[in-house]
Length: 525
Image (cartoon, rainbow, N blue to C red; front, side, top):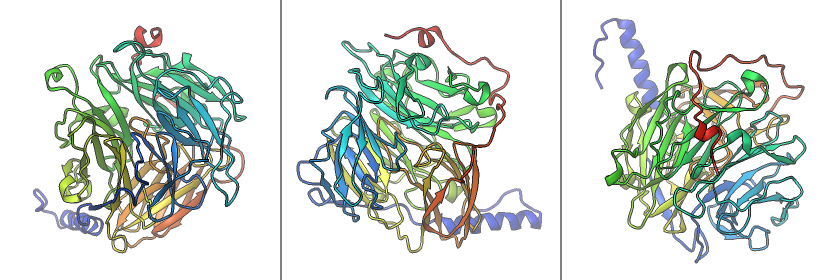
């Protein structure tokens, strides 16, 4: 690439430095090896939704497939745990609801019974054991068709709250009320569905602090050509947990166009704020009123600009997963596509290589093609420092082992340990800088897409950058800590002491009235 318009020697020097940084970070395109079925998972294993979490705290990610537990041997071979107490569900989500340090499981009962909360009682060094505590923690169980699960500390008490996006019941487009289970700060929950009153056909949920004001917000993906919802948390502005739907004024969609299945938050252009991918099922005959898959880049004043960012049209995109597939310091994208014969796609982000954000299809080159896919998630299943994937394709799990040369293209992997905040650091915002690496901002979120969940470990690709690297961790409690680290697996603990007394935050979007139509604030079934 030749610079144009640069004539000053200083400008040429800065340009050369940028190229040198890009060269240090960028490597070959991603490459995966498909681990044979029967070796990766037992013969006969099925699944449409995937969630990664270290259930037995042995340092490697285990996996839930539709609520059934499979234990990792540390090399990417998974074995079924038949006596764990987890008997299966529509979808599942890892979270530490009781703050005892291990991961519990919330199960959506859509099609397999009622919702359940399962407490992790696994003894140290023992086999996994889960106990149903649904009736002990409050009104957390119902028979509505839960499709989208996400968790995070929405009310600021240090415990994770739960959001369930419910789908249709009885007839097409006959939506059902979503559920918001707020923690009471003692391991119990209160059903505050009235704060997120929406009777639409929910498919997915995604919780993140997209506006970086210190509280967590909720994005709900709705189907049947119904509008999505962006519930913006007002806790840091008013001192109490409440939500306004600001989808349209933030530029994250139009009403009533939709047909979204899953979404994912992440800093796609490495400018320090959260962007979003929305995976939409867009039939050719409905493309004049139904959006195709879109990328939304956040700009000034926390407003988003819509673009396709190089993503090709595909009729049945379903679940987006953002992860750094090549350890170069930007977020790549895997998109599944539902229905027989429909291909999944791996898109490589070109921010590092070309200094502008767009995606390039590298699926065939990376040997990452799947068909008839639904859920997908990323984790380092073999402990070598790069991110592998499980893609649920054709109702069974496909394990894609990353072939990145991690001796040359390295990563910083960060396990957060909250004290007053969530024990796994859910909702924390972490910035990596220095050491020759690309500046990166990552948030730890529990759940993406349509009830998929990548491992709750933050991953920063640093390429061939020498390090050491500086980490700034903004905890959900408001505390801030820093660490200087080398590449590899690292841990960070939230500072001890009382949470800082934070003043009320100014509105992140001044001069407008939040969009809250009657059919969302007052409607619903």
